[in-house]
Image 1 (cartoon, rainbow, N blue to C red):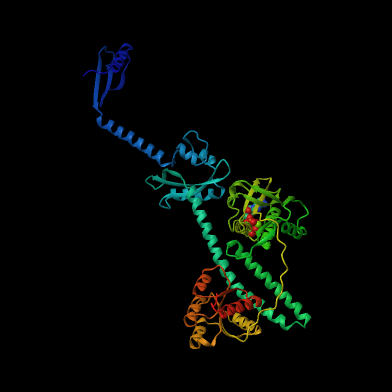
Image 2 (cartoon, protein in one colour):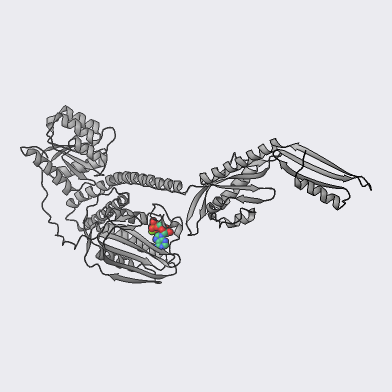
Length: 582
Ligand SMILES: Nc1ncnc2c1ncn2[C@@H]1O[C@H](COP(=O)(O)OP(=O)(O)OP(=O)(O)O)[C@@H](O)[C@H]1O
Ligand SMILES: [Mg+2]
């Protein structure tokens, strides 16, 4: 067997230098053969021995190749998966982190192996997540829990936070203690945000349902208060003391009604009547109202340049927008500062993106409320319009202010924009479509109420007090009502004597048999009888069903005598025409 030149050379060198004991060399001379040589001299003798051992290493090479292929496969899989890989040697307390892992962990890319403490201090975990992450690692290493898995937030260089998912598995020694922990880190920010958006829309839906429920019950209660109040007002005309007391009751009832409308406004369920609103005037009125409550340390700078430009909406709602923005601005300046409030006109020549959507080109009234306060940290700006999002202490803020502003402004076809600098202050700009100059409103002419001629009216409402109120009002108006608080009983009576009645007044939402079903049953026997529907939710699905079933007119709750008188008279008049009810 020939040995490799390097081995021969090594032996020759050893002989020349007359080395005392042994020289060992090893070389891979050929494919799959490992040669090892040893040169030895026996004692003081001049004789040398050369031992050469050759070993077949085909198996070892195969294993090495397989290992290299596996490593390549692993590297490719890691690169392809877009995840980061990390490994913690718990015994040396050093950690490996792939470059992708470093990027996902928000660390400046550098050496992949570093002491664990160095990684820990470099990874900008969200302060609220630090404890839960440490607890989870500790528990997992002690043997609690099947796997190490969690979702945490990492701060980005721009101050915002991104969500990552960390997964790990550990190798344990005989006593069950973890000696190595390795795993992956993946970017799940898009998924988390989509989940957040879904949660928000579900939350909005839940609030809308809640608001609808409140509106229904509340309107019934208000209906009783305002309706009986109105009736009582007729009877106490000659008693100034009673009239004054009653006016307080009525005013409180009206305030309650406007509160219900406000609750509905942000869920988009309100059906407020829109009319041109002079934004600048409302803004000035609100400021005048607030001026006495402003802290002395706050200086107000006003600039009004929009004149009498108007937007289509509701004055109370515009007032609410201003109130909420100004209140937030004042809260943001606990040590005082400058509050800027103003109105301007602005022409948009193309689409414009604002925090709450995209505005089409056109003329807008810009309402600006600015402060020189705390500013809004970058990581919460995207959430301030969420319902219930607040950074204020419990009991101080509900987090509904800006979501209400958003809801109202969106309904008016506008948008809201926020500019903020941490520590310097914020400016909220509300864009409202300019519809020209407010028309001078004609004072409402109080005409006499249309009266009945003793027609027989079937009245159905599940709330006995409202049945009482409606029958009382109808009687005052010159009708002969017969009331039921059970829709089943009302229909049974109608079926027994269908020709007894000249018209029907029915509530929409009732247990067992809803308004639409009452109407269908009545229509089956008397196709042309006038039917007036009473509802607390004019835009709800029940109204559509009732209209489809054949209602001729709708009266909103709480029922005012004036509205009921007109609706009933109109329905009866339409029926009297040759072409029947409308
Ligand atoms: N001008 C501002 N300056 C700084 N932060 C603001 C400003 N306006 C709003 N914010 C932030 O947005 C959050 C949400 O505001 P929003 O008006 O919806 O609720 P709130 O003021 O906390 O409670 P509420 O209005 O129901 O009393 C606030 O808690 C605050 O963190
Ligand atoms: Mg607020």
